[in-house]
Structure formats: C-alpha cells, structure tokens
Image (cartoon, rainbow, N blue to C red):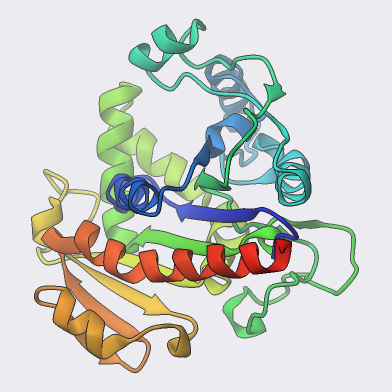
Length: 314
C-alpha cells in the first residue's frame, strides 16, 4: 500500500468495460470532491507505434515471440518507481502517448508517439492509473496479501528476489477482464479494422503473445480487491468466425470481491437493479447497469480510504 498518497489502479484488457469503469470513477471523484491525477499505462510503453511494428515484424521473421504485454515492451521498473515516488511525495515523472489523431492534436505529437517526460502536476489528492499493468508482479513475491494458487506453475515469486512489484503501492486495485473468447473476438475485429491485417494475422498475434499474457496479465487478477469479468450472453464458442463483437447489453458482468467484510451486500443488492449473489463473494450484474453499480460499490471504499489517510496525516 502507498505510504502517504492514495493510488487507485484500474488494470485490464481493452474492450472489457474499461471505459465504463473509468467514467464511474470520474463520477465518484466529482461526488467526493477529489482531485485525481489520471495516468494512462500507455505512458510506460517502451516503443513508439512505428518502433513496435518494426520490432514485431523482425521477431516474427526470426520465429521469436514479441508482445505488448511483457517487460520487453514496457517500462515496468519505471512504473514501479513512479508509483513509489507518488505514494511518498505526490509527484513523479510521466509522459503521454498519442493513440489516435484526436489525442495527437491535443498533445502536439504524431500519432503513435510520446510527449517528453515531465513532472506530474502538483496538488492531486490521489493517483488514478488506467492500463494493463497496474498490479504487475514479476520474479518476486508481492507485498500484497495473495494466494499463490492464482499464479502459473513454476512462476518465480520468491520473497526478496530481484523483480518488479507494482502492486505493493496500490491502495485500491480493480481488475477488468472479458471472458477469453470475447477478448479474442475483440482483438481480431480491432486489429483488422485499425491495422488492416487479415483475421489469420490477428490470430497469429494472439498466439504469439500468449506466454506473456499468462505470466504478466493474468496473475494481476489474483491480486485485485475487485475483479470485473465481462461475459457474453450470446454464442461466442468459436471466436475465430464471429461476425461482430457482443454489445454491453448482450453481456453480463461477474464481480468478485476479495474482502467480503468490506462490503454490505444486502444494501448493494437493493441499490443495483437486477444484481444477484452467485457466491458469498461474487455478484452477477446486468450489462446495462455496470456504471451505476460501480459507483455504489466503490464510492464507500474510496471515501473510507480517504478518511483513514487524512487521519494518518493528522
């Protein structure tokens, strides 16, 4: 956990419902009158889009796997250092990435490139991180309380081993992930539309990054305080021939709570339309009410964290 300043991290896959969760937290920040410094995980990519495409092509030509999930393509050490610095001082060095033409115009850099590193604006109450690695742990044992069964066999997470432990600084870690077939459908459709590749090439990319996905993305969901999994309510049994991506109204969300004592489930079931408990720590939520549900679930947690942090400062 952070020492002085709060850190909230939203970690997960594109298309899982990240935008809905992001908007819910922005609403919570406004309600609680919190000045949140918002940082995107793209800032800690190692390569520009052009550099990544060139390195990916070279790796494929040599028969080597190369993905955007692992340490080869991301500044994990810099992300951990940034979280540590922010937790202690409320500052740190960040940059921004222009992922589309609109954002490039706002930042004054070409699409697929970064701004210069610069100090985070002063005066924030907490840090809100959104990206793929807000709880990443590599080759060490995280200081977050966790069950080792959640990690792949043979995954080296020894205490005090040299490695990366971003998760240790996060006060509220939210995981957002789609069911795997849904994630593949979204990946294939997105790559074909944006990168003008064939479905076969998109599938090759999915397969080539699977090892990094297993070791650097999936383990984070064993560390989260709340997991949100998007599940389709339509047939996605063969993701490689799906004609379209299921909409949010064609999905439901499975929400898992790590600490059941932290939540009043009876009250939440009254507040969230259509919600039901499927296990003692798992709630099923209809697709159309996720934003409303997250406000009811997360606002009390955040308010309590802020209250406790203020008490420590005094």
